[in-house]
Image 1 (cartoon, rainbow, N blue to C red):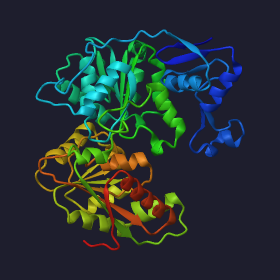
Image 2: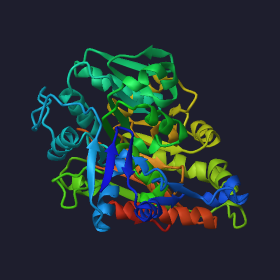
Image 3: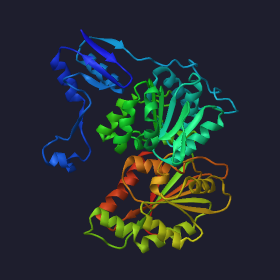
Image 4: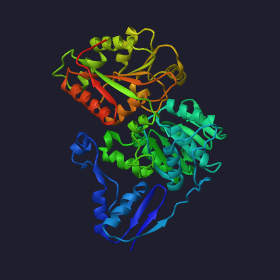
Length: 468
């Protein structure tokens, strides 16, 4: 008889059937994205694969338990479970739409997700940008027993600050923060992954970990942290794009599932997965219109990709002038996303009254810009490096200009999501982008963005010429 021993971080399949373990090993190993660029691969010291099941020891990340048990059933191999976890019991068995109080009515999918967390203790909240993941987070914290050591993690200081302020509003008494100049750990600690070395001795005592924007938190450092959270029986990851490149990067996908478990489903969707289009149809998210304008110069047929970005986007005054003219034609709150500082500097010189926020700016400076994009009743233009506003930050823009290019599904979906929040003075999000007919690489990426946004259900129009 096979035995599966389960702990919070890792589990083991204890079996004398070597053939069975070899089959599991073979089905749970995937090649890293761009493995062929690796120095170790080129030196033939690594085959490019990451193994998620050890065929010698039977060890695997506990979040992959559904995959392992499903494989055992398919292979008709019987097994017993030895669950060694000390699982936290939630104070609440089931929540309803009025659970949060304060005149807040939870949407059906938010209720579903909180109840799924209470039931399963771990999983991935796969929910569109601006769909209200903060309420899911707050509902989870409210359902926990008092004095439960909890980490709420994010990759960026601005998002940690936002989460800290949001959670604090709900009256949690023992809430701390750990980022930048703050070292205030508490029962609930909002922290950047980069700051956790300051409380490393406390990590084994953490019982709940909630990771916001998980797609930004799966590099080597956060994964090393997750391995140290041996007492964390509740593990929740949230993102509109938990799996990068539409799930095609299987190493990243199975790492997320390994540390946090399966994608949690909601009855609010036939497939169990929410879509942006379905929430727009319910008026939970703002309707959107995406317009792509052509960029026809300078012609860069022989530039490699990075040079094309430099000469055709970041340092192209032709492009800068088109973006500034487009911006001048718009009303309301406008956010322009750029990829490089030189591009932002150039646009700032052409739009002298705009707000220009970049990586070097402190939290207070960013907050002021965010507040303008949330509340200003006047026309306001903010320029920001795309890393700051790519995900997580709450703004209520009328217009979003993607001047940063790009092709990755998760980046494009997250960027569009910056403008999908509804507001009293907003009827629709106007998203603007560009078809770069100047270089094969840039053109291919432009077409990829059109394809991604069309697939997401947005109304996409491609213009033949500049009409502003």
